[in-house]
Length: 210
Image (cartoon, rainbow, N blue to C red; front, side, top):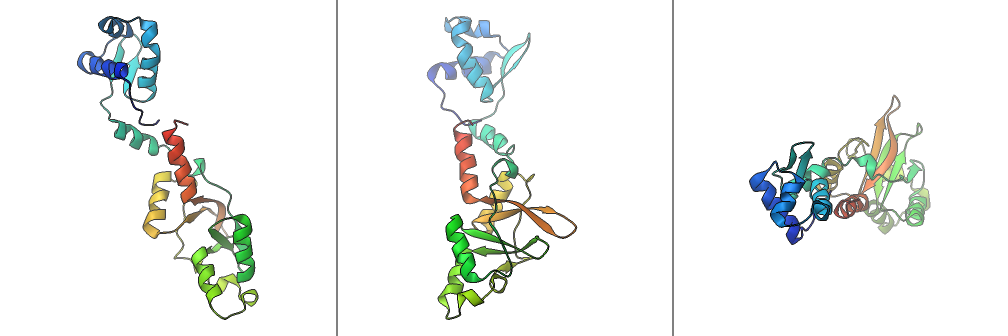
């Protein structure tokens, strides 16, 4: 749920429930000189947003949570799997030139490199490819395994990780994307990717109450 901007009547309802809760909808309506039907949408919004809670035969009561606390609670309910995207994968023997072409054709900032068993072997960023292209070497003759970042220097996440924890990894490591992996007998299988754009979409969706 998002941190919503309350209207005047919703703020009045909150103050009434804070001082008198638990209190029924009819009692709240009486204090505001309104009908129960008129208040129903406001009570529904306040309940869905987490400001109020309701119990049958008891009434409404204030949860005591601020908008920031409610936002934090909902952030901790979002997992990587909810916003992951499809990874762009190349093999370790692909040339730097072909990797550059793949990056631009796929319009991504990070490529994931796999070994012969199809498991994660390395990561290529725009910076890696730019650095390689500045030199005098023939890009079609240089395989990406020469310039890629290898384990244990690759930061990964799993689909069941909290999105907020994965976002912290992106910030702490100053990288644009994380490979989402699954452990197998052969190694780490790449099952998705998480980018800064994915995280941004999650925050926008949260703000829009999606």
